Image 1 (cartoon, rainbow over the protein chains, first blue to last red):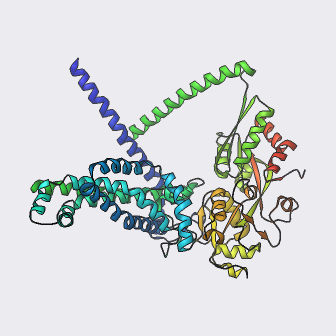
Image 2 (cartoon, rainbow over the protein chains, first blue to last red; image 1 turned 180 degrees about the vertical axis):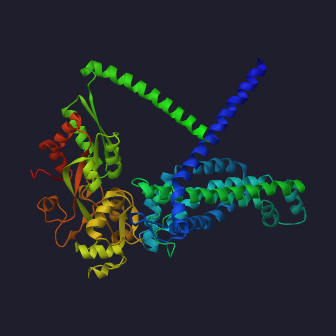
Length: 287
Length: 289
């Protein structure tokens, strides 16, 4: 009887676990079936075409690829230094009381719904840019600012952990050799935690690339290839988000095809993050 | 994989069956008490431009005829019309004229006329543009306000609706005249966000131009926007009714097979009460009334 229960519980868990895999499979296949014909028909022109005009049968998503890359890189330029510095502070400098306040606060930052970030951006960041830097304010810069905030929790928490888990002998040895605290952080701890931090950044970038709701409100969604960070832009995600309402036929398929490209990009980011962290655990074992 | 999908389908249909059994039971028991289970139910779906007006009509209709229920959904003109074709909806709403193939399949009734207003910030000194100037602004040929006004200068930020939107295709048809809207134009997916961007208080907002439905030109409690005159004719319901304002489109309802409940609701929309409701919300009545 006991044996039966054990077996049964194993099966139940297996079934439930399969369900999540099944969900992934169903969605993936649906996107592929819907989107592949458009990519097949337009081929390279789908990815390299500069004109997106579904009404005229033109489906070039190069402006959106450039848009996604530009907004995400912008977010990284703002968010990565802040995130890493914050992680170093939490791991090395913060008194434990401050840490107990900071940690949940940063977790909370991850819990704010993206639509709230977007709304705040529209009412605060966009007018600020318009008033001080010119333009309408709906711009790459506005999107990057919002996304940099949204990727902070990922970067901070993973980087902090990868610094904390370093063997204490690293730090003790460096200090014993007469290095200052800052020298220890810079030349011993950060290099040793490098792979974890890089993985944190990549996961943060993945978060930024996939974000839709927050950026749809602040990017302006123009389909032209931007020439400055103050110009409006459309990302792969917002291309789907803004046009799915009325899309029919080939237009709708093209939006699913946009999803395929997005899927591939995020998969590459996630796989490289996993690859980097795996190498890290190997190298630690050798040491 | 095929097995998995059919398993999934089976699961969904099972869930749906359960849900429909539950609703059917509750509906019929409620209906029996009131009117012998013949509560009429009309599903209306389609254009999001027509939807807010239809919701008002539905609300009033139910007050007049408490035995009926009207369910209003969005989805867009094309989706609404095909929903009528597949029997999901009884009445489709459309903010564009029907295509030739659609005219053969469905019957349509014009319920009102809606104007399209070009809007700028109230502090923008420009009051009047010609259709050609508007077209040149949206093709990207005119890029600075000084090219259309001697009192104002600075970049023009044209704002348009997204591909597929009925309002956008109307604008493309009647203003753009076959030319393309510049890819540099800001794209927003609702009347409301365009209105917000044009009426905002930042420096850039004063240089923006957009187009919205005439019905939402003046909204109490919201920042005002200025409706531009086109060739000297102001975007008002009077000018729309007397035909001098050129930019208007019909709002249609579309039905497939004749159904008593649908006809009754459409008759209500066309009645003086229904038309009055539409007029009070900025549309132009179709009966001239």
